[in-house]
Structures are given as structure tokens and as C-alpha cells.
Image 1 (cartoon, rainbow, N blue to C red):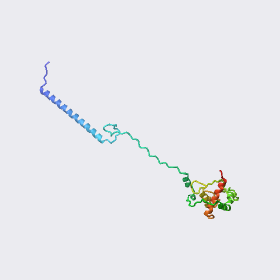
Image 2: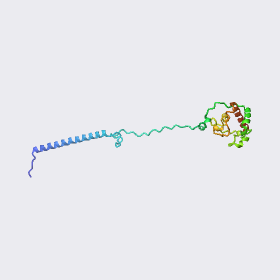
Image 3: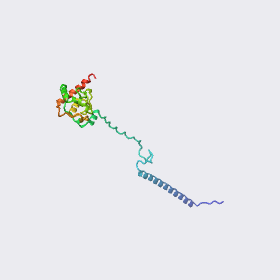
Length: 213
């Protein structure tokens, strides 16, 4: 078979065409690579900080830091429990909240006995047992001084049977401090010294009947 020779100018054209085609592919590849890089940079700049889709440690995410638990709430201030004296003052009638300015100690029980016999024995009894002639008609019954039990706290200090308690009951009447209304107030009848003497005698009745007890 006869050999067909390709003209040399055709071969040169083919080589030139292939060179141009390869150069075009290289330029196109470089352009695509540059465009992709630009798109990634633009997307990174537009994405909000703290993107939840970014993986910790990736270039697109902020530096990772472990969650810190909130501090414990401050301890509540402990409110102290009210004292018995505070409770007594808060619940006392108005008359018991009035400050006392008189010292009711130091009375003369001998003088107080005479006053007691004249004004008090009719109800409280000659010896202070609460069973005087007038006691039958009274309810509640008069106080039995011999028992030494006193129930009215007239100065709101959570104590009963003090000199001030007896003096205020005598002067103002038990009703002013939540007690019986059967006993009247003797403020307009007795002087301060007479009240002081009565207080001393009532204490003597209580102490005499409770000796050794």
C-alpha cells in the first residue's frame, strides 16, 4: 500500500491549535479557582458571629471556650426569731406600752396592811385568799394573793408579779391590761405612797404563804 504523507503545514496548524486549546483551559481553570476563593471569603464575611453551624476550632468559628456555670445566688439574710419580750410588747394592750417613770418598790407593808383591810379585804379576803364576803357575787373570782400567782404583765416585759405590775393594776384596774373589769381603778383614791405600801403588803402575803416552797 502506498504511504500517504501529511503535509508539514497541516502538522504545524494542528500543533498550534492544541497549544491554544491547552492555554485556554489553563486560563479558565485559574479563573474558576480565583472565583471560588472570592466566594468563600465573601460568605465568611457575611456570616453572623457565633454561627452555630461552624465547628469548634474551624477557621470560620470564634475561639472555643467552655461553658462557665453561673455564680450561686447570694445567701438570704437570716432574720432572727423575735424574743419573748418583743412578742409581749407587740401583743400588749396600749396601757402596757406606756413607759413607767415611778419606782414602786420600797413600800411599808405595815401601812399597806391597814389600807388593804379597809379597801381590799372585802373581795380578796382578810388573809388574801380571794374568798372575802364580796367574792361570791363576782365572776371571775378575786385574785388569791396567797398563791403567789400573778398573770398580768402591765409593762410588756414578759414578766408578771413585779412591783410595777401590782401598782399599775391597783391604779388603772385589771381591765386596762386585759383582766377583769370587776375591780375598779384606784388611781383617784390612793396616793403613790399608799400604792407603794399596798404593793409591799401584797408581796408579803404571797411570800408568807409560800415560805420554804
